[in-house]
Image (tube, rainbow, N blue to C red; front, top):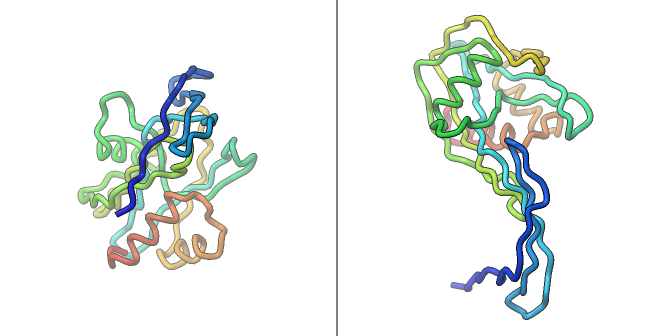
Length: 180
């Protein structure tokens, strides 16, 4: 097995911080002896949820995403509050954004969205045995609910219409594990 040693950190400085992210710049010496500069973004961990109704319909959202400069079609996603368990965050986000509650929760593992410079684990869940209620999104969220067959959502991930990485991964894991 090949060894994968980490570079030696010579110095580190905080560049930026807010309640959701921090940016750090590290000066390092790589194992080759070469000096380097590495930026590291640490984000609040998150969740992504695939709600599946008894009739096979799935629920997604279309919402403006600042980083893209336009709307994105995605599964419900959100960040964990301090000390919050991933499944509790998933329950909260699903209720807030779509007004859905679920009796069955299937943990589908996690993804690390961009491993080169971002630390942020995104926990993936399937929600089943759904009850529809009233959504209560945050005032800054303008969420358009989308309801479709699972195969339509999967095709949108495969053809590039859906580009949100956690959504794509969760749809594919659900299909490969025969959970949808």
